[in-house]
Image (cartoon, rainbow, N blue to C red; front, side, top):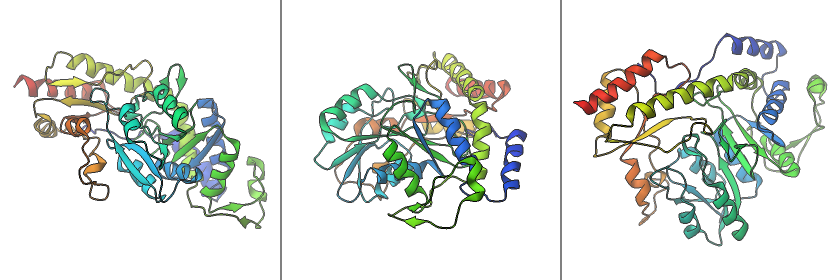
Length: 371
């Protein structure tokens, strides 16, 4: 089957993991620091805190801002449930907002309508790698005083007005799970510009423990004494996952180039298919994580079944969170989100799709509509 998404690991990652094995301690150790430094260089960022997942990165960032019970965080309903779970894990309430049906990105106008005295943060989701309107959102923040925590799980390598997502902004969270553009096997990262917040997040990611700061050359010499000063979590990245990430980061440009080639081929092939509406994405600046089309006239599910019959996997990203029992609100209507949910379909996109597989997917989509 042609997979809709997958990670791409090879012998280089195994070789790097070998050195992590030889070190003998597999938790928070020197390769995590090396990975953080490499990410700083890649993004041009001030501070990077590596975590064990993208979800814990979001939760840790929100917790570090002091968000908790009685607070609200506005977030698009059209996102993976991890965004919502990270908010509710703090005790705060996720407030669903609508998206623009053409881009599937957060509707900043709808965000403004949902602001309240309880709003402490807004979480834009850079869907499919395409950045939200950060200028409009920052202008709204400046007027109302909330914090912005960007869910950039899809946006590794994307740029906004000439700057990498993660190279600017208040707080930006990434995911490096098994199907992202680069993977650590599992992992995440928080990027911020505030030294005091960076220190707080580092403390909280390892159970609130404080000990003398460590450098790569001093990991083996760290003492056994520490103090616990606050509530923390076990959210640190492992040495093994960081080793994988270090190699993947070196391959990132190659991965992104191939993903862009595939997306451009899809766009070109489907431009004359009347029942397919493509997302308006500029692949000169967007590093795509998923390739999503809107299938019109109620034919999405039939197309998915047809492709499955040809051993082509597809996906739906995502079930709106206000449809889930845990987050359902009586009377809440998000008309654009609900409309596009019936239409969106993800087609195969990853580095290891061959030209032959790409042609198979394109021909199969075209065959379905020709029939």
